[in-house]
Image 1 (tube, one colour):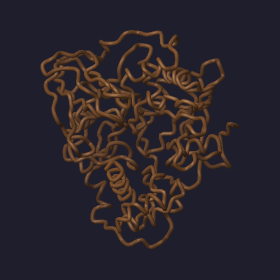
Image 2 (spheres, rainbow, N blue to C red):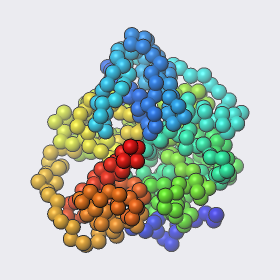
Image 3 (cartoon, rainbow, N blue to C red):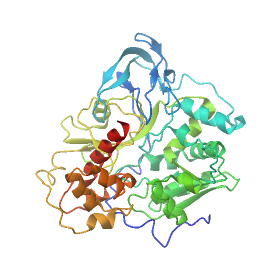
Length: 447
């Protein structure tokens, strides 16, 4: 397959150009201190929750495994700080339902150095051993999907991977955590890419980065190894360029078939943050205990990108960053695909890439806005990167014709980017309707 930096001058058809609002891009990553208590959910990933391996009252050190993977599509959890297990109980989650968590009371003056882990010669590992080592780190996709990384790096029998696509687009407004990682930790990224290539059998790796991030592209080019099989390619800036299907179209001029994965084209896609963390954790034999999170928004006095220990309550994050307790709305992730949270007791988990804070005056323009009937303007159709008909899907959702949405109008191809909602002049919450419809269809399929 011929590598193309651009495809007919466009990243992909349709899409939108929301304001970038990346005000934290020029600030180096800082480190957040430990909260007095850390709440580690056993379900921070797609798949089966982890199984606790510690007891209440037991002392743990930073990096120690505290929950084991419960099956193949599961990952372990590690202690994000040194302290004592205070409880194993149900706590609120960002998605709503309460979930089982391990609560750790952190010892005062605990170090943020890793105190657990055995260095390993990962270069000597065969592919399957690399995959198992990835699972032991507890790594999941740090771009937000939280899919177990070892499962994504596992190539099914009979399949062949030629290209590892590394996603460095970060097209969501406000978020800059991936950008700072590319600028500051490019060498760790190259190590992680090399291990992922060996695990999948890929002969080359392509790092796709939007052309509004020249400093990141340059930092990665300076860190490229001499083998000449890892490339940095710029793609046009457009939302949702960070979707793996859109990025593949931009780089290669081909589309992933409907209902298929990039593997059908001989590709595996990983986020830059995920591979950077693996580049650091795999050689050290350590587990994932923190991640870089963008904390920003009009309601934040000290915005920036922070190394945040997993399990840190949002209330502690916002207090440290100077966000008022009466903040009008707090969103986990970006404004296009993120979700609002109802409780600040919710902890930061592996899939949280950003914490956005908006004040009452920032929301004033949306207060009282109501939805109006669809006027058939076609704005949603023109913006949908998957070529769907959001207007028809919305009308079907209103009539609860969920089966028709899935069978005739390809609801499963929607990845909830929010372009339709963003462009709708009638203020119809289309993507929220689609999420409900897909959840109902999943429940029907499970039943």
